Length: 57
Image 1 (cartoon, rainbow, N blue to C red):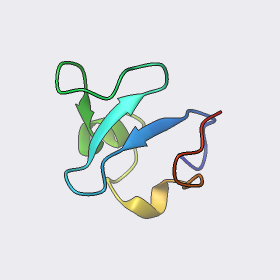
Image 2 (image 1 turned 90 degrees about the horizontal axis):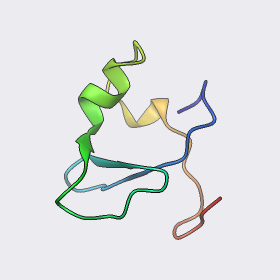
Image 3 (image 1 turned 180 degrees about the horizontal axis):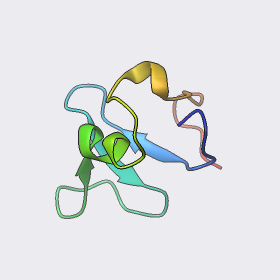
Image 4 (image 1 turned 120 degrees about the vertical axis):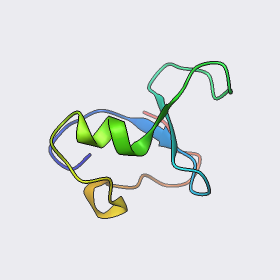
């Protein structure tokens, strides 16, 4: 997110979000809308800063 230093993984097809350190799976995840809404942001891709594909911090 532009105002935060969080690193998340987001599925471009279904807007599923995995927080840093979470394994990408269907067992643990959240959706982009409630994740961004929790910080007072609209669920828009423009509120995210993309890293290089496959890049991790």
